[in-house]
Structures are given as C-alpha cells and as structure tokens.
Image (cartoon, rainbow, N blue to C red; front, side, top):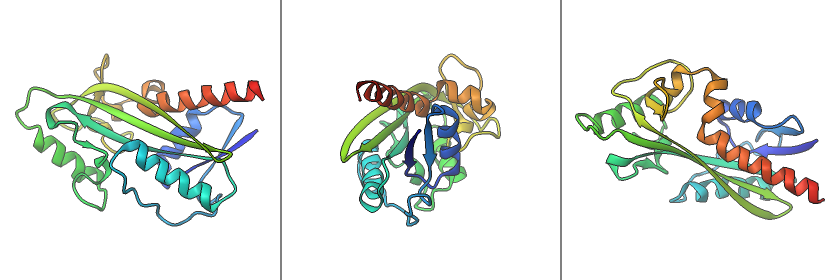
Length: 196
C-alpha cells in the first residue's frame, strides 16, 4: 500500500481522487501530513501552482505527495479565466460569482468553446514529476444541474448533452480532466513499481 498526500483542502477534489485512484494507494489529506495552513497559489501557470503546493507539503512533512491545479480555458476569452479560474470574480473564490462573470463575458457570443485542464505535480523521494489532463467542451447559456462543483453547471463536455453538474459523479469521473491527469500519474507509479 502506497501512502500519498493530496495537497488540497477541497473536499470535492479529495472525493473525486479517492473514487479514481486504485485501491493500492492510500490517499491522505493535508491534516494527515500536519500541513494545515493555506498554501498560496501565486504562480502564473497551472503546473507552477501545482508544484508550489506539492513542494510545500514535501518540505513540511515526510510524505510523498501530489497537488493539482485546474483551470477553465475559454477560447473566445483568449484562454481566460485559466490559472485564475478559482479567483475569477475575486479573491474569495466564490463559484457562483465566477460563473456569473463568465456567462456575462460570453453574452451574445456564439463561440462557446472551452476546455478544462488539470496539471498534477507529484513529488516522490525528492524528485518532481508533472502530468496533465484535459477535456474539450463548451460553455452553456445558463447553469444546468446541481451536482459537481466550480464551473461544472456551465461546462458541457464534447459528445455529451449534459453539463458536468447534471452527470453522476461516476459519469463525470469517467471522462474528466482530473481523471485523465490522475490516470497518467497512476500509470507512471505502476511502471515505477514494476521496475523496483
């Protein structure tokens, strides 16, 4: 059994990761690692923020760890909100205000193309590894569904008519950006174990 700290205070992300990771990985949270302070996200890229969070845990605990940062990139807004997705409408990180601002910015725009991107930074035995997953889709005209979190009520993945918020957790986890990034990390860990 491998113990891995997921450097996040976001309970939704922890739940998703628990559902996606294989049973031979015991997922620990920041409290388990004794890292209770908020880790600032001051980098200008998703992978930069993921590395900041993972390095903080690696430096302040004895655990192997990973962290992620996720952004929603909207084509008509030149890739915004991107790395600022969680704080798009202000530092308090209010999902409703973020969605309102985004829908307002796209009002009357026929180009609704968007993609979710997750960058994961893994630190094992002092070495850093990066993984990325993305899912293409579009922004709906209004919120749909009450599941999920963040921008899920306004993101419809390509090939589907439902928003992420209208899907069950297992439906979303089967195709999500976070799933794709976590899968790459799991394949890497599996191959590493086989070589050991």
